[in-house]
Image 1 (tube, rainbow, N blue to C red):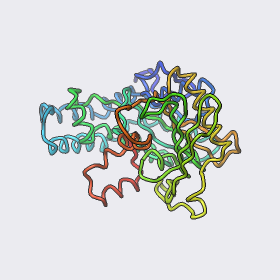
Image 2 (tube, one colour; image 1 turned 120 degrees about the vertical axis):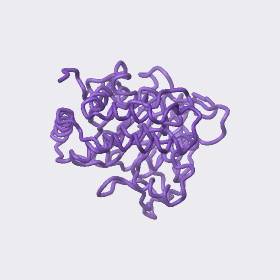
Image 3 (spheres, rainbow, N blue to C red; image 1 turned 45 degrees about the horizontal axis):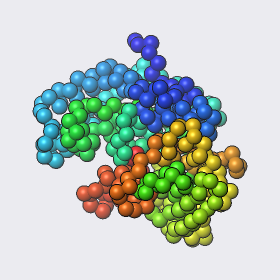
Image 4 (cartoon, rainbow, N blue to C red; image 1 turned 60 degrees about the vertical axis):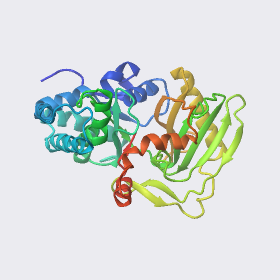
Length: 362
């Protein structure tokens, strides 16, 4: 049995672990080290995934599957669907080897013990070594060891959707190349949540911070489906120079199992989901991250209703901001282009079911 470290607490991780844990987990570890408030959690390494492939026999079966199908470059969509279904079936039907299962379970149970909650709700988040916006799955409000183990496999399997395979084929990347780390993060009981950019992703203007937010979980913002509140704040004097309060008819909340859309109470639909003090907190967090990371950032954050202000703001993700100066649209439009590409081509009922099940990709 390998003595190699397979799982890392966020406190043990940093940017030097990008190729071991994936960008998302490496960044969460780095920001935790730097004193940024991040929900407690741990990162399952790509090496654990490789060990799963070897010990379960899934790896050899997947290689044989691809060899049988042949070169995927330039093939028709049905071929990508066939390959995706076969590869995902192989992964999802394999039992987690006992040694790996025990490793993951011990970390999850320790996380529950540390927080003081039995079968604590977590998000199970994908983390690739390279940016693949909209490509992989994340699952919200997952409770209990068996559910966590299942969702870890489903995150791994999300690398083998027809869309993912087609993307790699077009780029000349081997079909089995995208190997994922997985973050297990305590769920934030979000009062409100959203995104922040320290540079305008459309124009490249870095003199202001753009904040978009909604009631409930941040997936109600990054999905690009529902109207949200939008604030623009100048960096030099922290002045809120623009407020656009959306008609927030729906928001994403935790359900008994998973998360989903719920109608926003009528008295909150046209009310700002952030106070000026909360906006100021998000601005300070954004500026601090930009300085610490050394470049403009694209962040996801949430205010936890289980804590008191100002200690209830938590960072969920940060990554280098991208500027699309040639494109026209709001920052939500930019994210929507990335994050809901997997819904394209679906009929309405299937797309609705996908949203309901909260298989968000980012």
